[in-house]
Amino acid sequence: MTRPEASGLFTADFAGAQVCRSPNFGERRDGRRPNALILHYTGMETGEGAQAWLCDPRSEVSSHYLVHEDGTVVQMVREADRAWHAGRGSWQGIDDVNSFSIGIEIVNPGHFLGFADFPPRQIAAVIALGNDICRRHSIARQRVLAHSDVAPGRKIDPGEKFPWEVLAAAGLGHLVEPAPIAAGRILGPGDRGPAVAALQRMLARYGYGLEQTGVYDNATRIVVQEFQRHFRRARIDGLADLSSCETLRRLTDGLDNHTSFG
Image 1 (cartoon, rainbow, N blue to C red):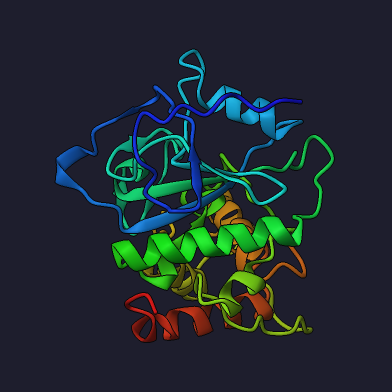
Image 2: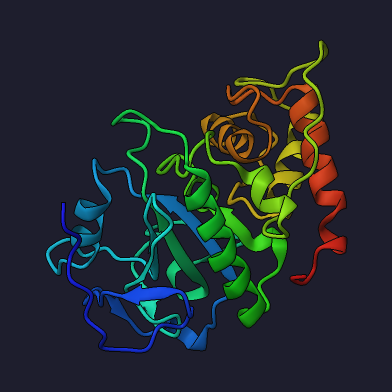
């Protein structure tokens, strides 16, 4: 299938990108500048269809970039502008994610259309693009995030098949070695008390939007599940086992060591 025709109405911010301008954007609000990078999958049958939809005014969605399976990078919105990629969500207590982030859509059918592995050349393109964006905007490694991190319960992309460890090895994103799954105490729905409150505090400290109630409610289960989907993919069940808690502790302990990119 032929991809939508590129239209060079602005100069690409990333030297390797083609330009296919989307009309779906606006100004960043409150003078915000991009200080986070959000990764998505398209969740559509084809990359061509996704690109057309992101550039269609009827969709009311867009992204700064789209990365096709063959590694082709297409820019649709200038980095200076506010693309409509993240929707409702928050990170580190700040909502309007679109105003403080740059979005990359990665072509993949996603969970509901036969979730496929991400081809190595596509991931190589994501790494090159992401590293370039983070260098130019001084985006901290721990602010390279999944859509599911900023919108838990609403989004699950780019999903558990996304190779975060490959990105981290190339200097893109904050990752630690997940603690091995082992027998031991597990926190889950219905639990309450200081241990649950401590878990909620750590998740909120890392950036997740979670109220610290001391009760393992459904919101806590969802956030733990999406934390696992990014950082502890061996088991994604929303239960705070010893492995999840230790992996989270390692991540929060490492925050001070990853305050800037590079």
